[in-house]
Image: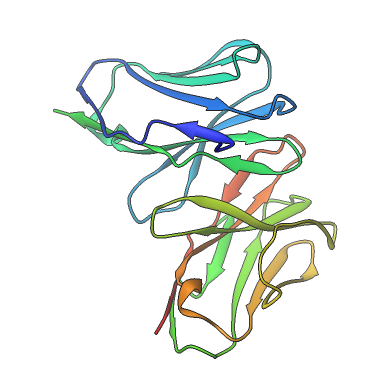
Length: 108
Length: 111
């Protein structure tokens, strides 16, 4: 069983829609969770971190954490073509474990 | 100013050679990391260094050795390169909240 699982996609949404990216993790001890965005040929870029159950909002991005369900999500409101990238979910226990990423395409 | 920098950006070499990748961060972070991203884009941690001490050492071959001359630098040395070592290697640095910031990556191709 993979430690951090994501749907590889591609996930396609129209411009202006809400994109919903999901992630599950297997290690209940994980306490910190992160979302990274990676454009093709570029390095991962931190979008958000979340440590407590509930929602955390930053601009158009909202991260959601449910530790009981071992589930993390990222919502992108008013999606833009520039949001098209691969989104990586990561969970921290003793070290950082990344999911394989979900490729998002936002169509104009 | 670049927060996390790596050199070289591209590295093409033959099997059996020894090579190094350099990493520097100017964020003042205490911890630096090396990651490998394979052809399937899966990002996997290799090493981390905190205050010059290795605190995580994933099950990577001992041909790979991290070297940290000071808190701002973490270099990766690879001996006897193999075809399977071809990948993109990312350096990262992290703060006390464990948020990590990545360098631009080094694409290593072993022929």
